[in-house]
Amino acid sequence: MTDKSAKAAYEAFAPIYDDFNHANDYEAWFGVLLPELEKRGLRKGRLLDVGCGTGRAFEPMLQRGWGIQGCDVSREMLARARRKFGDAVSLDEANARDLPVYGKFELVWALNDIVNYLTEDGDLERALVGMRANLTAGGLILFDADTIGLFQANFASGDSDWMSVGQWTWKGLSSDVEPGGTLEAEVSGDGVETHVHRERHYTGEQVRGAMAAAGLECLAALGQHDVDGKVVLSESPDEMRDHRVIYIACAAGRRGASSSVEATTG
Image (cartoon, rainbow, N blue to C red; front, side):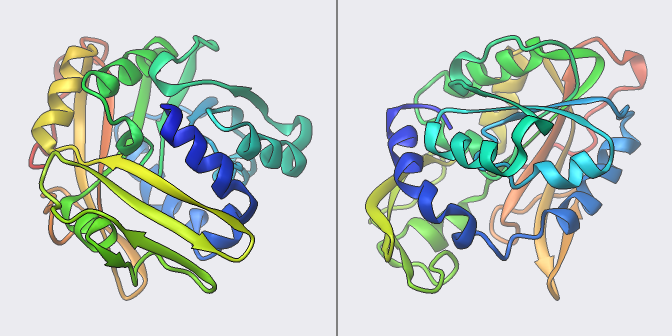
């Protein structure tokens, strides 16, 4: 999470966040993502989780023997993570656009549309520069960006069937949803202060440009969608079929001649 609007949104969202996202199966997701990282040389060690929220991604990685440093812009989200995990992880309040150097990590990630909350020009590059500064030699960066198809489903004017859960309503507030645009949606319902989420869609070209400017080499861009309840990754991302595009990167020049962009469609 990044700017003031994102911080305000997640301070308000925190009381219901875990219940709102209870159906998200991180173990199943990581069961697909981690093999892709391992194919590209992932070494087990330390993870920096940027925009860690309440720590929903921690347990699967702790069980795999990873050491974890988490950071988030929302104190309320971090407070819930501390209550759940205590001293098992290190946590810090930090803005992804001005990321501290916590050390050297084998893996740095920003999952679940963190980069889409980077709404100002230059924000994405600044965040990626900070993530790169935390990489150990040979380390990998992983992040996802929501597709225009998902933005159309969740941010176009009216209630979103995809995002509305139980007694809570996710309502799109944007009359026009165009590639590269900044959109808004409102969350309301029992036990949560009505608040607005402001996100920006990034095209594949924009993401790859920010990666290059940040000194990163794109190793893969994988489209993600569900088939019969299972996560499927494709090396040819489609902005309408896929829900998000998964990007894997390393520091430019660190992996030798064997490094290449395995998929560049976005």
